[in-house]
Image (cartoon, rainbow, N blue to C red):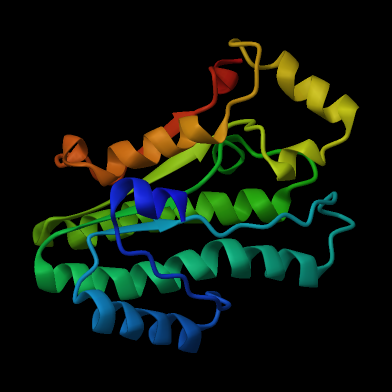
Length: 202
């Protein structure tokens, strides 16, 4: 409500499981009816169900890929069709440095985030001729509710690997997304922007 008043914009909220194709199609039908077009799409749905791969259930593997990767595909597919008609659009997908380098106990999460990178690059090539860009942001260790739930020992180990000696904050990820959503990135597509305080340098 505060942002709505500050920027004098129309805001609509919708609730649904975007890993389900019928839900996503219904959502985009509503978007088209209310707004007529879609300029920017940010895919940010994600969950974790951590565990060593040899102990991970197939259900936990599938669930993380369904929420993280399938939903990104379904939403991007519908968004791209609207954007191609308008010959303009920007899709920004949320990946992770875990998708680039892996992480103990996160085979499902790493696979989903690596899959998002592959999806991003493939769709970038497919949509480029229609002036639609597709890029990804790969956050490192960011101070969120999800990372606060990490055990102190694991959190300390993560922090020791960050050259900037601190966790990132959500606003720093939002800035990266805003860059890809802006005209400043109009000639950039299929790229992965790592925002990790230098963590992948070690």
